[in-house]
Amino acid sequence: MAFEIIESCVNCWACEPLCPNKAIYEAKPHFLIDPDKCNECAGDFEESQCVSICPIEGAILNELGEALNPPGSLTGIPPAKFAELVARQKAA
Amino acid sequence: MELPVLNNVAPDAGGCSAGSCGSTDDQMGHLPEHIREKVFNHPCYSEEAHHYFARMHVAVAPACNIQCHYCNRKYDCANESRPGVVSELHHPVQAVKKVLAVAATIPQMTVLGIAGPGDPLANPERTFETFRMLSEQAPDIKLCVSTNGLSLPEHVDELTKYNIDHVTITINCVDPEVGAKIYPWIFWKNKRIKGREGAAILIEQQQKGLEMLVARGILVKVNSVLIPGVNDKHLAEVSKIVKAKGAFLHNVMPLISEAEHGTFYGMTGQRGPTNEELQILQDECSGDMNMMRHCRQCRADAVGLLGEDRGDEFTMDKIDAMDINYPEAMKMRAEVHAAINEELESKRIARENKVQLVSIEGLKVNKPETRPVLMAIATKGGGIINEHFGHASEFLIYEASSIGVRFIGHRKTVAYCEGGDTCGDDESALDKSLKALSGCEVVLCSKIGFEPWGPLEAAGIQPNGEYAMEPIEDAILAVYEEMRTNGKLDAKPAEQQKVA
Ligand code: SF4
Ligand code: SF4
Picture 1: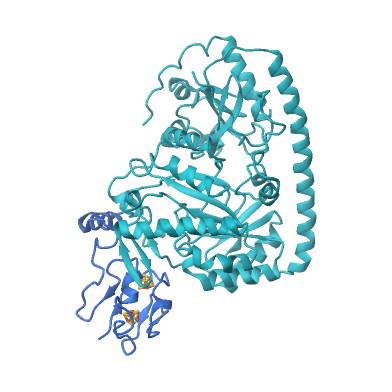
Picture 2: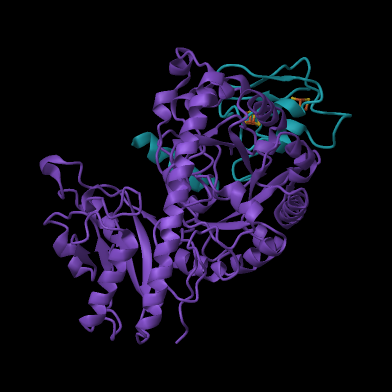
């Protein structure tokens, strides 16, 4: 049982001090979770702390590789709109 | 017709020529003495001081505990100049090194702020370590901090320890219904709380924090972002409440919202306010309290005088190569500060004498009431008209009326003339200037080229280069007089053309 931080992490440090198991550490190019230490906050908090504060949709995944904060869930921006912006920026 | 009320926020010389107005036009005139003293040489609060003193921000606080619809943490790009966006993140030790280097090089630097890119109080260890080291090593630097207010109450006592006498709280609403349209979520007591419930907690904490700071004698400024259709009708009430609780200044800033920023507002087509909308709101609120109209929304890691950024001189590798002896630098700084204060004081005295003169003249000539006129000024500072129209990157906007001249605010543009023979070729830049000047009938500058003249006149804005190097208020009064004599004040101004 462990979560994973992936490359969309913006290194904002918000999650790191909250982890009850000190599983999160600064790394290049982005923060990482030590899978041996992370217990998904079971027994410590009702909500997984890193997932609850992370501002970036899709930055933290569960063991199945699913985004714990899926697109649109935090910003309210419709995912299709966001995809449009990303495509435009790639083209530019 | 209602008489326009003179607010006393005019920078530099003679903003107030009405006989009923007090002895000074200093924008701090209405404040109690102990507060005036605190803000006298604070470049963010005193329009006059920001020509002489500088501030800087360091980015030590990356984490945030709320989400605002005008922010996207993903799009933190170096081209940005929105507040809260930073390109270089510092650890406290680096930040202190940078502050000492800047303070030793730019003795005018008197204020250090921590403002982001996240929320300083969501990063209390980093923020307070920076403040602690600076209080010890550079006692001649004032400290200030900006916060969304969520964690403010729990940190107020810590703040008082480090002698932090300026706190800015961003308060966009006092009603959770409005708040739910601005803040999608907050992180509170180990949970993410969405919607109205989250907004209600945030509002409660902001108000509590404001009260606690005031009770401890810490100066509080309130910033609000004006979001048309969301909180525009609501901000006058915000202004009333925060003033009643003791905030000494309320600064209304326009929403900056572009699709490229990737923010909720940007992506959903929420527009920012027009210059007119911003001004109307600032006028509405200024009856209630002193508004800061010269805020240029400097970026969070800016270095230099307001509206200026010398950050490139102080990158970490350049700082590492510098050898700073701060105790020595502090002596030099004290001398520079003393000289500036002397100059400010003598200017103040000269101005008081002048205001009295104008008041007497104003009483003598009982002029009929005429309509107010907006005028734009191109200036490099110092209270005189000394900037070429094409070089201006911003205009100061004043309103002249039958009872005097008052400062309205700044409007940004881009300098379209970089010198040389390309001057005036860039259509879009001139368009931008025209847009910035909307509502103005006159633009005063030290010089103006041939190209912009026609488009300006066509847009109903009279260019005027006749008052080069003259004091701003004197020139405005003279032009207003001219307009009166020419009968231009009798009728309503010609409908201005829409400038795309
Ligand atoms: S889920 Fe909990 S234990 Fe796992 S990394 Fe996040 S905060 Fe730490
Ligand atoms: S909160 Fe999210 S974006 Fe910030 S460091 Fe942690 S994983 Fe990265």
